[in-house]
Length: 277
Image (cartoon, rainbow, N blue to C red):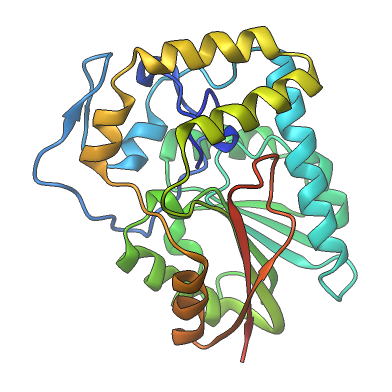
């Protein structure tokens, strides 16, 4: 989910104020470390779901919030249009607040929003209750028979918060719910060795283009003074090379490739596609 004032933007905000778009969704029973880590607000975090479900401010300002939602909606539409079927069934796994849901719902036959963090999921369900073709799901509801066959699975800015075993379990789950011509998109995958400076620069360029540069810079300064790095080390943070991700998808029966551009503004990160073999 990307380390800034917003998870998708690339550089983490302070823990006491960071919620990202709350897009973390692990498997139904995420592994928990034997010891948690105490964040700035004094809350003992034992896994990323608890982190994202805690009380944080999400964006540096209203313009950041709107620009992020607009950009992700555009990315979704691009891939929905390429799904190969009119009004496809789309599963957004690890959707968080899904601020773009209203914007993309009309492009979908059914839009399935899966989120593990219960508080975030409840708020989202209330917000989209008036959209007849939108459903909110807990991770254990993503199962054959419980949902229609899925034409497009999108997991955006999710993988860094999953242990490898959790990701492998999801790859198998998605295979079971995909339509025969369906595909999986793993977006905003972070490769090893990406400098925090690279992420910060990408955020500042995005902020300058969208009109919230000063607020973004302030957020980065606060990040440098926060204990987010300690929390990330304690809870774990997954990164993959391009070769690793292609091999992992292939080993689970997908025909895999890297696709361009990446979701969001940070093109130092990667998007991968998996189709049923």
